Length: 359
Ligand code: NAD
Ligand code: DAU
Image 1 (cartoon, protein in one colour):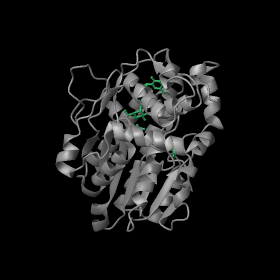
Image 2: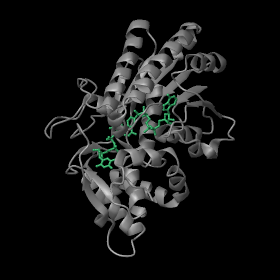
Image 3: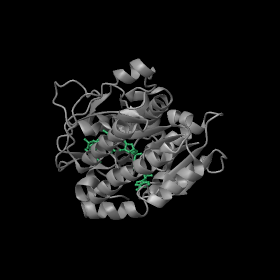
Image 4: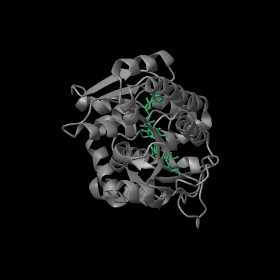
């Protein structure tokens, strides 16, 4: 069995669905607190699969984590659970420190005690795979080479600082105690089940509702976009063939300026679901910039390609098209997401500003 933390979130639920598509897949226990970002509905298609089980628990809960480990005896822990949204970390960083730093620390401690008591062969086979981000490396200038595994850490937001702290703890648990860890640092993901607070799903859902499409600052910030199933495939490759103690950067060589991303989304929507009049581009609204906004991220994924033979399957164009098609076919998911805590947070963040308003 493997443990997945945060499996009800965007990447975790895509990972579980992809994993269980293999007929001989090992069973999964999904451990998720179900914060505003956790949606068990994402996994309704596997809820009755005997290879899948779900426990609602907080990774900061010491008793819950040690009980689950001794009861289910996993051969690997895939740690996705985190507070993940940069804007939220700017407004209220506390939860980011609690979950991303203290939660990872607790999970490492409990995993170490569990691992130390395993028979020798099981110790050798065990893996703690920590899912992290390219944001730990900070921001690139236009002519800088992409982030490699040896780029020094320079996190700029409370979110990226909390992820950097968790990466350092993971590294230290390998170096000091020999816990067989793996860390992946991935660029921006997009695809199905992406919570509509992040740029791509926010733009699609606002466009379909006829609401403004908010672009922070001048829209020339660059992100390196990767379709989520390519990230999932990379994690499977690192779990299967990665070397304990190593870190692997994951990215699709897909640098795009935010404004270009939003134009592409508008043009794809114009083609697949035209407005009664005009283009979706007319909804674009430039708004106040994010404080401390990183200008450019780019990933050098050559280590992963060379050592583990991974390559992304989707191009930016094919991935964006699939994503827009998924949102068009899954209006009920978006409607469900738009109820509850998310609305309250949007109200607090934007007040009556139309850019943040949900229908
Ligand atoms: P998400 O916000 O969509 O999901 C996070 C999940 O973690 C939710 O299901 C939430 O309920 C759960 N969770 C939060 N706090 C918890 C706690 N204390 N205990 C148990 N569960 C808790 O995030 P995501 O976008 O799917 O990101 C998953 C991981 O990948 C994160 O670690 C993130 O830093 C990393 N990452 C994300 C991206 C991206 O583009 N989204 C890119 C690189 C790395
Ligand atoms: O790089 C990996 C990271 O990518 C992950 O670690 C994070 O968990 C994930 O949220 C994502 O962070 P970003 O801050 O890059 O993603 P976001 O979708 O919030 O923003 C993408 C870009 O779009 C960023 O430059 C800010 C901009 N933006 C975002 C929103 C929500 C806008 O211009 N308007 C918006 O409304």
